[in-house]
Length: 442
Image (cartoon, rainbow, N blue to C red; front, side, top):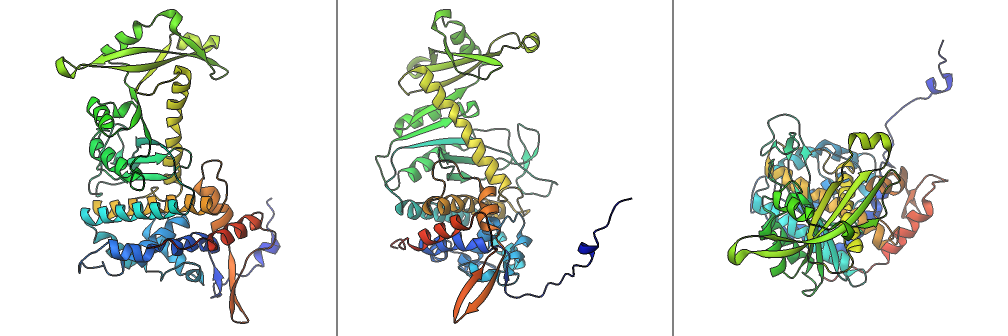
């Protein structure tokens, strides 16, 4: 027979404390929001010109932003900011979910582009608070935002055969910041809109430094000669995966001499080697030869070799110079983009796209990107864990989802936080550092 805890049965539950704060750690990103002057930036940049629901866009975007920062994935989750005294730790008036739904539906494609510009300016202001940025390594990839039901405007079936949207994302290697993102309708075509996306990406990356060195990494889904030519025109270095089931690629790989392969470190149950060759494509005046680096792998376990006895090849084109082992290692690090995409989804922003209207979902997508970046800017500018990528769920658990009580001590508002909180020192250090940042000149 199971035991019933008599102690727990005696605990009474009431929801009657107006001074409790649900997510007191929102004070950290809210402090940075004020330093970046985001509400005024949004109000001046996103102009609805009398459209229903378009008034005071700054406080509405920031309400959605803080909802996502707190772990919300639906518009209704904004009500958590209205509970108790939670509104006191954010830098704006909190709006009701019904108002936010009307606001999102007021967006057109042009308004979404205005919101993209807000993200870009916010990024410039955040970077202005740090040391000068050098060259950047950028990873471009697409993902599938799966949806349920057939009433989501623009949703379609892509290469995964799942119903959803197919956004493009460009992240900065090392920090995981999203430099540019674009929500696309569901499609099996990974390359759709890539040229325009790359042009806008490069413009953003060089907005504050026209001579910044850029290297962009792509997987084989973006393999396109026109894209490579465009990168050359923009003076951007690249590595771009190619599909090894293409006859010309297979011919080039077959022509590599046996003594050209170099062994590299690999997993304990497999081995890998790399080599390079020239790959020629195009006809006539468009005929061009590029450097192709090839990695081949196979399993070493006897049982596994019976299933996959042959080498499996992975290849990419590049204009980078240097040793092929180093270039191959550099290209493989493109996989870090998957960590940022996973974090964007698991971190609540793209776990769910709330509206049936495509432009409303596009606006939500841009706000989710801003929330994703705000977590990283808050941590980096606060001097926390700058040596590796930030995981939103970890920051949310340790620093944002903090219960607190707001009290008035001799006319001074004080947040009373839990004793023995394991990350109390980290919290106060970040808060003091952010409060010491000067407001960015507007």
